[in-house]
Amino acid sequence: MKDSIIQKQKLHNKPSLKKQIKKNKIYYSMIAPFMIIFSVFTILPVLMSFLLSFSSFDMLQFPKFIGLSNYINLFLNDDVFLIALKNTLILALVTGPVSYLMAFVFAWLINELPPKVRWFMVLIFYAPSISGSAYLLWLLIFSSDMYGILNAYLIDLNIINTPILWLETPRYALFILIIVQLWLSLGVSFLAFIAGLQTVDRTLYEAAAVDGIRNRWQELWYITLPQMKSQLMFGAVMQITNALGIGMVSVALLGFPSVEYSGHTIVTHLLDFGSTNSTRLEMGYASAIATILFVLMLGSNLVVQKIIKRVGT
Figure 1 (cartoon, one colour):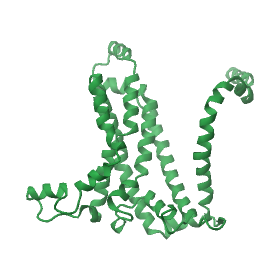
Figure 2 (cartoon, rainbow, N blue to C red; figure 1 turned 30 degrees about the vertical axis):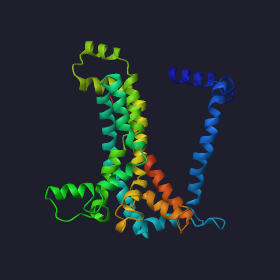
Figure 3 (cartoon, rainbow, N blue to C red; figure 1 turned 90 degrees about the vertical axis):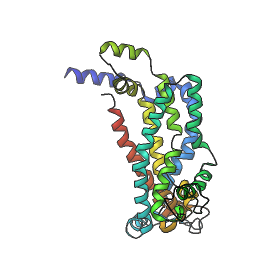
């Protein structure tokens, strides 16, 4: 009873939203430009896409409301979408967790190096994610003629007699996409983990040693990871987004569309219906695809956030 009375008094004494804004108007004015840009170019397009997903819209006529028809057609009549959904989930389940662990492990190991060596290694590991010629390298490796790097190597070792059509054979498609995506995955998350490791208070390790922690694994679980929860959360969001948003890798390596849709993903299916280069321009249908992708990303992020909150507990 006493606790409820105290809680009611706190709620009563809590300043209203209007008073809080007036009190902190300087801070609100500083974040206002970002919030305006974020609302106009992120929140508003997401809301518009969600609304358009319930319509038939070809960009020439006004959207016509058709209810759940786009979603019904996607799951019941669009076999290519089901292939894209399966491929996306396989790629996400493999590349998402693996790339997340790779980014953290490499960041953890590199953080132990001397400063000059550390930043050189950070550049080496981060460079593939921002390199414009990254796809060209893998096209040379998996080239289908005898001059392709992988084919030439296998022929020299007498493992194969004739070149393998790596990029034209459906059974190799997902395997190639996984390899390339993992190679490209040490991007922003990797930098976030490096930054997080740099901010961990070193005196905590000394205090932990007094309390009974005796090895690096215990230090990692009970000190390092709990101190990096914000970076771990940010890295998880980025890796999930990248894993579920695979599209350009498939287009660059396997073509558009890929042979027998072997490398087709939700993003490439979205491009097929909603890109300005597409002859379909079924924007309502494309919006439904985008909404499903958004729900997948949001749901995955919520699950991962719950898992990360338990780290170190």
